Image (cartoon, rainbow, N blue to C red; front, side, top):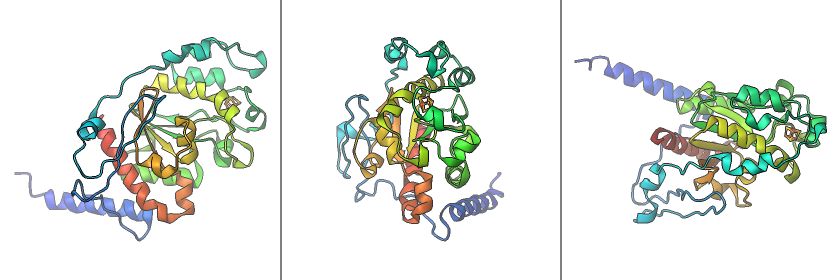
Length: 287
Ligand code: SF4
C-alpha cells in the first residue's frame, strides 16, 4: 500500500541530490562519510563555557565524557542579559548617531532602525550602506560572516553576489532556504578594500550582534570563514581546528566552516565544506 510510488520518489530524490551536487561541486559528487565505521577519526566538540573554550578529539574509541550525548546536550541558555552592563554602562556619544534606546529594542526591525545610522567607528564614514542582516527572525540557525564586502555594501544585504549565490546553493543542498535562516556579519559596515576588521571595530560593533542574537535566540551559529570564527570566538586557532570542534558563544553552539568566497577561489575546499554543512544539518536536526 502506497509503495508503488516509492521507486519514483527515490529516483526523484536521487535526481535532486545529483542536481544540487552538480550545481555546488561541478563534476565531483560527494557522499556522506560512513558513520562510525570504527576507523574514522571524526573530530567533534566539547561544549564549554564561552570564556574557556576547550576541544577534544574522538578517535573512534570510547570517550564516555565526549560522546554523541554531548552533541545532543541542550546548550546552556545564557542570555546576553549577563552582558547588560556592556550596553547599559556605555555612555553614548551623540556623534555616534545611535538611538540611546537601541538596547531596549525587542524586534530586529526596531533595532535596525535605531542603529542603522551608526558612526561609532571609522567604518561608519566610509560605508555606502549599513548591512544589518536578513532572514528569519525566529530561526534556530544564524549564519555569521566577518563583514560586508563590495556587493553587500552596495545592496545593504549580507551574502549577495557570487559568494551569496553559492551560499544559497550550499543551504539548498541540506534542504534549507536562505529565508529559513538568519544571515548577518560580525560588523555591519564594509572595511575599505575588504581588509580584515580591526579589533577596535569589532569591539565597537559586537554589542549589536549580541543584541541581534538576544532577539533571535538561535540554537546554532555557523561562522563562515576563519576571520568570522576567530573574531567571534576570540581565538587564534586555525580554521582546521575550529572546523573540528563545536564551540559556544553566549550559550549558543557554534560551528565554523569555509567562507563561500574561499570555496569559489579554491575548489579543493568544497569537499570538506560539504562535510561541514552535513554535520551542521545533523546538529540542527537534533535541536
Ligand atoms: S562597523 Fe559597526 S560600530 Fe562601526 S560604524 Fe558600522 S555599525 Fe557602527
